[in-house]
Image (cartoon, rainbow, N blue to C red; front, side, top):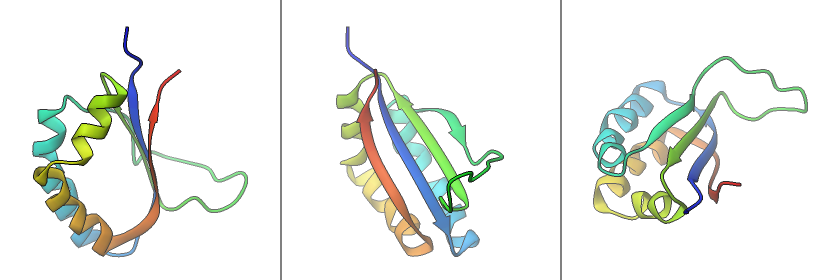
Length: 96
């Protein structure tokens, strides 16, 4: 059985209007790869210091699928909006 894969992003959005374009543009890639969002910009507390103003966990059926979703042109085009509108930390990890 494959372990699930996750994208974890701690983002500081500087330009909300451009970031909205990222959210609209990434929908095609996320649908194609079966992404689910257990965490997507909900309420948060920073008990140990700043972590950005947007937090996202994206779940995929496997680590390989999580990596594959990042690589195609559909997502790479969308990511240009994220990179233009925000800074942060982004990682793809295998679940437990």
